[in-house]
Image (cartoon, rainbow, N blue to C red; front, side, top):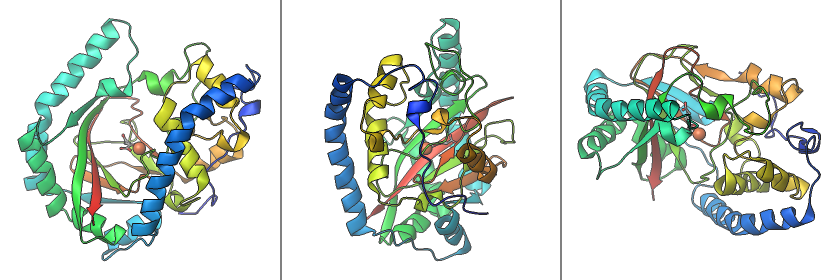
Length: 324
Ligand SMILES: O=C(O)CCC(=O)C(=O)O
Ligand SMILES: [Fe+2]
């Protein structure tokens, strides 16, 4: 697996058909955008400073799975049936709730958003399922691997959610409401905007082949521009306005100082034939696999998943973090 570039992709928004191709920057809009971003930038800087102080980007590992995670930003393990079965059984009812919600949303002509397809799992709302997730993460070694990755004494499950992906999700196929434009082949690529010390996992709950929206990640990209101002700007923007690509917000974004015209969720904005687009798609490591495959990844890496072409994808998204 080669490293196509040591930098996160930069997009020239002034020459982008949906941005500079439609609007002129406007100073008032630029000021309004800055005012909204400034507190979020300050917050993202604090989180990054804390990360630098505690972890210092000294990624640790103690086995081949951890070694792959440190090197590539992604590694897969298979859950034992004793770990997987209670998660599958415990999530059945929640998937039915999501399926009905998706159906009702489509029937009413509303947009299917990411949040329409997601159901949060927590210790209060789903005590048994939550306990099953904690057990599975302990028994699979994922918690220990997370602790070692960040050089912490221990790690915990921080959040979990169930995601049901079906074909033609609006947030993948219909990026804009005001113009017709095909999504580029990089659509969905993002880095997470949280910025904290997390290892994440996508647990497949059905078999995921190339058509079922497999998780994909650009190996090594978790280290590109590590700890940089660029990453801070990206997180701040996505915490404020993602994933709206309305005309007004696009014009506001275009009115920001140029170094701030960066997003954590940038894949949908890449130009279809640019060399960076082709390089990301070429280097993407696409992770297909059976139910029970736990795809561990560093959310600072460029990643995506859930663009289903046929059938559907049922996953649990799990976040783990160090306890210092
Ligand atoms: O749905 C996927 O495969 C990707 C999930 C993701 O981006 C995340 O959990 O941060
Ligand atoms: Fe993500």
